[in-house]
Length: 393
Image (cartoon, rainbow, N blue to C red; front, side):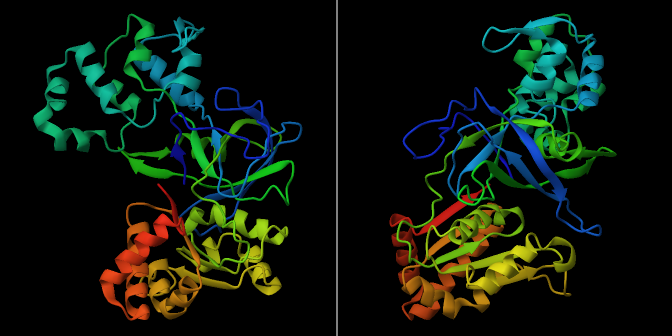
């Protein structure tokens, strides 16, 4: 799953030189592959995307992310222009003083998808609409939050229409369209001139319409093989493989949380370390949603991967998730930790990551024989030693 990039440190990685490409100057990577990994009966759409870095000099390490600057879809831009009473040809000035058209600004610079609180407040002030101004009052926090959910800028314009006489106001009304970061799912030691991404296409129903994530939806519907995709590398020093090449590695990555761990496994396959590796992977249905299944089984057979525990939540009456598998294997998991294993978690921060941490604490408390207080201290020490690492969103 992606996160938005603020002003991260973009790096080519620690190889003694920096690439000329960055967030402000992304590299136009050629799309080599853009294919659906999930089955036709899956409730999700997850894509494997391969991008060529040929000639860029870009370098990265397992754990890093690729930043992509999304564009708003043309039909959404047309609708907003119409709602604002603009033609799209008006001249406006961007955040840095550059000149461009209102259409270009709404396509590449400004967020017209997910509705921001600042946009609603700004529109309420601009229109002077009494109902809208009541909605944004501080004592109406719950009602305001409910209104924002599932709405886009076009919904606001349709419900509270007004003509925008000064097109430059779009830069005050709308937030900056930020890049999205996707965990890299390849090792450059196996793919010297390429980078792979694993992208879940975000879709949801709201106000009678199907909505798409601005970046994942664009990757799914508007980025064809052979086209160019501007990218940069975001270095993540806090999600690296152990420098001890023999240290055991436990990885928990349900869904597209598996992406960085595919990179870890490729790195080991390329001979960069001897780490014993254990992966917990979860999804809805094995037949439809087992991402990189053939690769995982091949790595098990070859010894790159020592253990693979899966949890397919919809394949039985009672839903099973990765945290249940951790509890089932807690005795052996403690043995790995007692040998100095590093524990990595990637994916959902709201439910999965806390549930996994609770299962991890229970495993330490039970199988160390020293109880909950010791488990809390042990986990705190793991964090201090950078043996417990999370990349959650």
